[in-house]
Image (tube, rainbow, N blue to C red):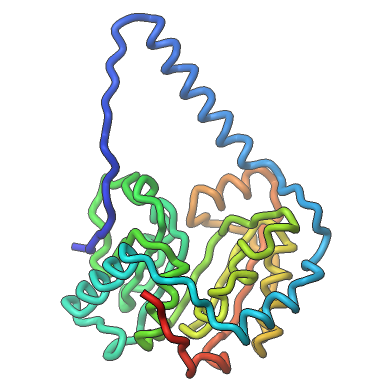
Length: 272
């Protein structure tokens, strides 16, 4: 059975004894549904194209290793992940057929990848225990591990341990559309070189064309060419992908082979 590592938040059960409380509960549900509908609106940004400081930002991160200390909880999660892979006979130094599903949310895309690639070990990672705890109705595929961890730290731990990926999936990450938030996007993050150093075939999907164009530009600055193409999502792998498609959003996919990233051979020191 697939291994899972995350912390469950406390569960609270509310019982409503009268119509007033029931009405409040129904109103709360309606509010949540409206919030979900709002999330399907088209992205609004003060950027019409790739950020004017993209090149400066990426070059800075390429020449100045990220020095943020690794948090203990992510280090513990990484050690647990290593133990799970070793027990499954899929240690990274023995079997590199690893697929990383970054920011996997509730894990729908991770399940899809695990079923589609039965010979690979799929690792779905999200920082939210609440999201990972949803939809636990059925058994996980045997080749799937869901992990609660901070990817900013996990990427560096994986790189420091010499991990290499077969595939690296990043489906509909938070686009942070404000121009001032370039540093929050994955390609504008100080951890971007660590992501690329893991190698593999990288696939990024987004409902914001600027995001994938910008990502492609960041890869080009690292000596990697990427293809960007419209994505039809005939068989959506996440609820977001389905919602965006059904709402008429343009969907985009970036694909790149990052195995040749020049910075992969020089992992920076880690602070604990």
